[in-house]
Amino acid sequence: MALQTVLADLESKVGQETYVGEWLDIDQERISQFADATSDHQWIHVDAERAASGPYRSTIAHGYLTLALIPYLTDVVSEDKPLYPDIRMGINYGLNRVRFPNAVKEGARVRSRTKLDSYEEVDGNGVQIVNVITIEVDGEEKPACVAETVMRLYF
Image (cartoon, rainbow, N blue to C red; front, top):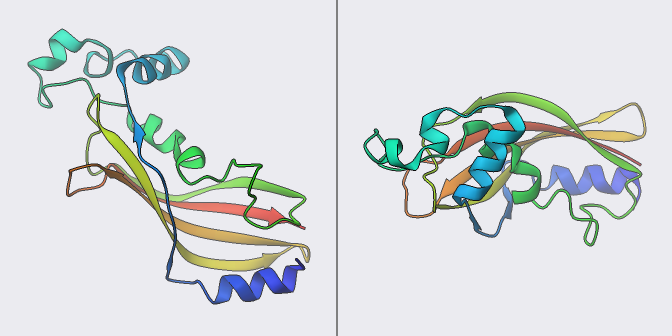
């Protein structure tokens, strides 16, 4: 698929939801492993007994854990079904904006919704894509995370 074909495909999808992910369980083991990896052992994340009497009545996932799950939740890391088959390389180029409007309690399920915000051709052989990723919490009105992600794809 040539770059021009990809650009035309993206043009037709701007402003639209392009992906809804599968639900993922957030258990204490995952939260604790993230705490170990980042050395962030605040009690609200790792002390179930103390957290039971805290504001959420449970431990909660780190906001940055929720953010770090975006590649998995959006299926960007899948080599079995790449977004576009002719991509030589895709990179995470950064974030424009991130908010954490709701906590993810231990035992909750989350999933992503992706909306294509914009795109532009870069370097003559690539495209930069800005997506708005919303991480939903099953049964909750407010999302756990809303992030504008910037990705570059090179052909």
